[in-house]
Length: 128
Image (cartoon, rainbow, N blue to C red; front, top):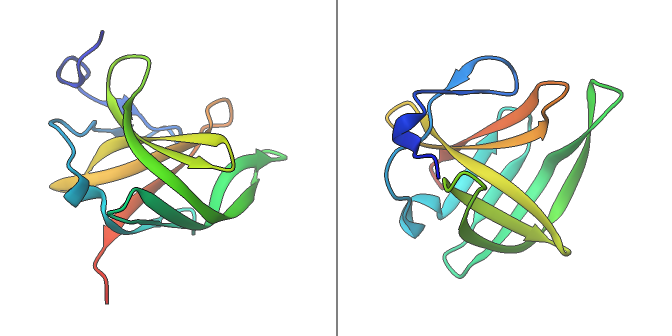
């Protein structure tokens, strides 16, 4: 089992290095509104539900995205290397979201397509 401490930087699907988030992630850190650099948003609720809008989940022709809007359940889980991640479940489909460092805090990254180096990085936005 690999530790995030042993991995100095993950390579983002877009090619730029991404620092993994170190430490345990709390529900309080996740709850709120997240905006992605790909135009989508995720709203994580304290009750274990989420809603996403214009969530880019699949690459079409190497440049455009299929997008989803809807909701489901979320949970904290571990990836195959034992790193903690956010698991979004929408209509029986699981979307694993990595925890990365965003400035001094937590960021989220969904890898859309590894082969074409496409991902979406989400930053938490204050609620109005």
